[in-house]
Image (cartoon, rainbow, N blue to C red; front, side):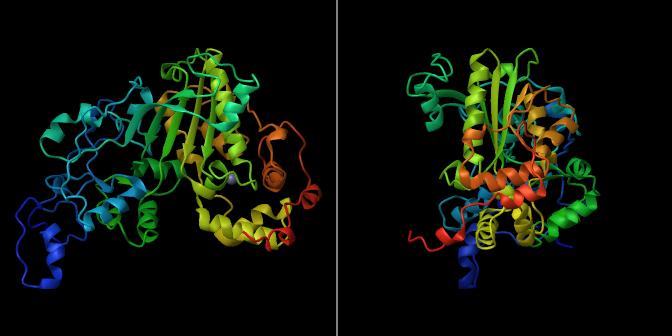
Length: 446
Ligand SMILES: [Zn+2]
């Protein structure tokens, strides 16, 4: 059994081995590979997930810094995947091991009203409902030297999206001075960034699997990086090294949780190639900008518009797998009937986004119903409805916004059950839906 013998607060000890001096300069303790419940030096601050009073619930403490090491009640690290850059910065000597952030003036620009779901351990399982007000709720812990950190940040911004600017220019979206500020199409928005915080029993329940199995799978398939998933069943919270999400709110944010206001919502999963670089093989950016435009219009009509952007690149398979699939599609005859099969051949599944955790953010925002859902995805629809949030109308992407080469994707999705108000496709039809062939694609000099 590994024992915590001293804390990083103690002075570094000189080492006689010159090769380890750079390490001991930063880390003056023995390496603790894992911990076990009941160890004398393990004394976690109580954390009761699902308590509606943030004091009763307790802060989430995951850091191994200073006093927090022995008081930790969560596994993983802050920052999602960016935790690794912090580690690099510390190794490079750019960041002190025990750095303490100064949170002055970082508080939210809008106080989201507390929702019942914040105190319901079944409604929110993949984010910390008090993650935006850590400094306010856990001031005492911070003053005691414990390293509590926000996992949600709320700010205001002005954004300009070229498709929206075009819509303003031709008069499809009016300039109102409140949401659309000027004829250039500058749009006022409230933004909420959220890092993932998983309550493991809740995540397991959402997927209908045993918590022990979930822990073992997370341990094994992260290269054994988080042994406490196995050795500390008493710790129920895990901050996984994955991307989070961003909420974009158009119109007064207070309307979002008020069912008297209409709500238009787009839930979008990241597709960097299309969203940012406007490649034409899929409908991602067109649907995103359509969603933004419709969200703006709903807010201008006295309602509320929300776009939620999830970092789940390439159906959460990542961009490398995505490009491998593109090649297999283009070289193997890019027809809609083979669309999903090409992904399954390489990734083993056609989709790893698993929308089961997605509705947490809707519960956090206090969304009770969705008047206009700007999505054709049956998986997103079913996940939201299963969480007790009715969807009153579903709006497919307009035909004229679908790039020619992306017909393969959208027609295959419609055939597989995606919502459409247009034509449904037969298997025979799908064989005829072809993307741009590799003949005019492979030999292009870039
Ligand atoms: Zn895409």
